[in-house]
Length: 262
Image (cartoon, rainbow, N blue to C red; front, side, top):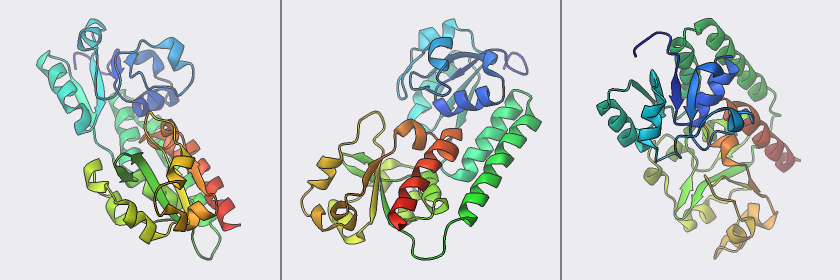
């Protein structure tokens, strides 16, 4: 970076955008991903510089960023191109709740707001513990998380963990730790055999069609399908590995699983 703390930050994923706003450091944001929707005012306040796996490199460079915040191997080529152009890049790779909390604390450190970031992260930790402790005793609804439909991809780490916090049991929990989506592909027959009582779908960038899920061959035997418990949680709420997932995403899961228990 040319200066510390950085005055001009470009965020290529939405969770760092939301975190900076929550820290009161939104004036440092020079550009954002096209998927940034939290808080709503970001859509009118900040220029858009790309999607998720693509970015307008000349537009980013024209913003003269001190720092670009990116995420995962899916943005590795973008990060490399920016690095070759002389831009400082921090690439996050959080895949679980602990990683989300670490991301918040790291963003705080990068903008010299360690105390504020610690307070924010600690507040989320306390909330998670409080909600987990409040889950009633008894059987937990079995949940199938569908992150994509072609092929079927089961839920990533933080989503699986949040299902547990909300009082459910992820039927493909052993796969959730796999960072790559290809390692979380499941066959339709595996879902049938797992017999989930609730299906939670969140297809990134695409509207979920519950009727299509219910119409899959053999899926009428699944308890969730028979009970009409196929639900969508919008991807900005649950597939964003940041504050949204720990708040509104978790709240949506809690409502669905409370209803299933009743």
